[in-house]
Amino acid sequence: MKKLLVFALSLVCASSIMAAGFEDISIADLKKAIADKKVTIIDVNGSDSFNAGHVPGAIDFEAKKGDIATSLPADKGALVVAYCGGPSCNAYQAAAKKAVALGYTNVKHLSAGISGWKSAGEKLEK
Image 1: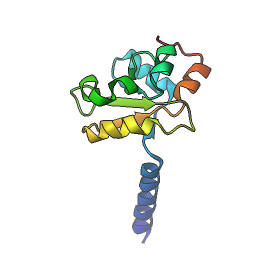
Image 2: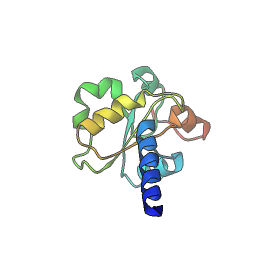
Image 3: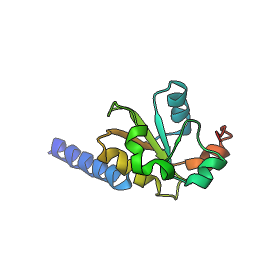
């Protein structure tokens, strides 16, 4: 009975994670992945915002969305991170879902978004 209860709780937890969208990545973990050159980052804030400043190395989803596959790594297990404006923004899902549809299996969300990146005092690339 105890094992059944643990199994049921794990299913509830897994389904709530899936309902919430994609797994979050912290600014610190993203910075490490950038430094290690082990991430592809997709900015979903629009080209004007992207040109004003974005997370270093990010791809402009608005400019590339018709051909985003050519900007993503060959390794479908590679880390792909999508972000938008901040914690209340869901626009990142367009890029994250596109990456999953293309077969990527390690897609995460920087929920802090560009606003959190700036608030943390991180450098922007223009």
